[in-house]
Length: 116
Image 1 (cartoon, rainbow, N blue to C red):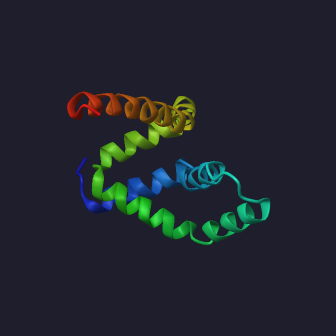
Image 2: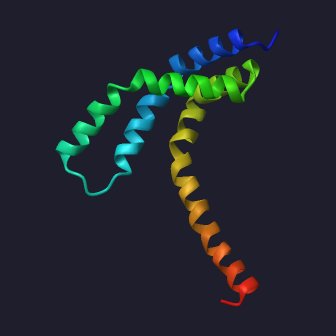
């Protein structure tokens, strides 16, 4: 099949219909904000919900600009699968673990290079 902007845009729409990325972003984002009241959390949720269409457009535009239609379709299949959903829920923990460990290595390299 051809890879053109229309096909990419259609693939992005299918991705957004299959993968609850906007909902997940909001839920993970609010969970990551410590020390806010329930009222503030509710107001954040409300404000972001009012912007969900803008967030979806932003995501669709980024998908279309970054990936081919085949790649977007593969991403949709993966993230729409039971395994993909589990893996994607674990990505923030995985990323935080890697970042923390990389920081320690970066500090060790800095001490070695700069003698600090």
